[in-house]
Image (cartoon, rainbow, N blue to C red; front, side):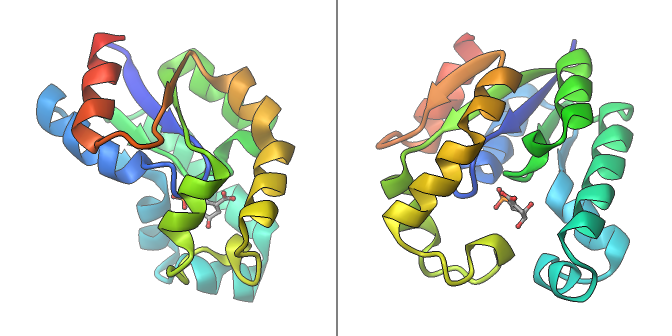
Length: 165
Ligand code: S3P
């Protein structure tokens, strides 16, 4: 069976959905952000602050490749995984890509109190989130095999929809 990779903007529900999905499917769940933190031995905020975004993106591609070649069955990715062509290509070749699509308002409600995302620091309005989302929209659509809208849905409902697909 091919792996399932969850993509989507920050706060779209990838991690929560991944945790329930793996309970239903069995196998091994890998969260690429968590692997990056493990490898780097420090937080994502710290990686961005000390080494910059390009360094983070290199680590992200490296971790994605390792994960896609491993026995992982469900992969939760970081919201920016789609930014690199090579990542989208690898995801398409080696997994079934499910795009969790949330509105800017949903994302805002989920992230406004959370300081763990360097790219949202000082950018916490629905409009700013919308504009960042717009700049990535084409990439998510391009990479997605399936799209599930997550607004106003419970995690169980989202997982049920993915299992149906
Ligand atoms: C990022 C999303 C984050 C994390 C990093 C960059 C992005 O992951 O990888 O802060 O560029 O969208 P989540 O989508 O899990 O928040």
